[in-house]
Image (tube, helix red, strand yellow):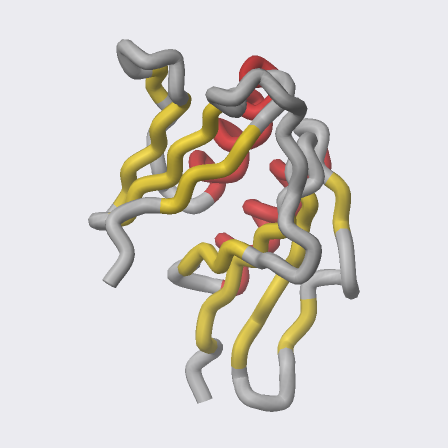
Length: 124
């Protein structure tokens, strides 16, 4: 259904540091800047794009919005969370945790305040 997710940023350099580190923790590569000045990440068929708003107004985050990122293991979720905190992100909601439904999950806010989650199903 979705082709990509686009997020706004007020500082693409900070965003690149944060997303390069978090995607590397999941086995992805660094982002690239396209001809339009957007930061683009592609991994396993998905695409995340980061841009400064084209209307010239400050980027803001969605209240209640969360972007979910698939991870292949709980270790990858932990590495993603650690990398994010080390590169300008903030841990939110709860520490990385195993939920009763068998999902291991962690939450971060990126340097612009966008809420992200990385998650994986733990083998039962």
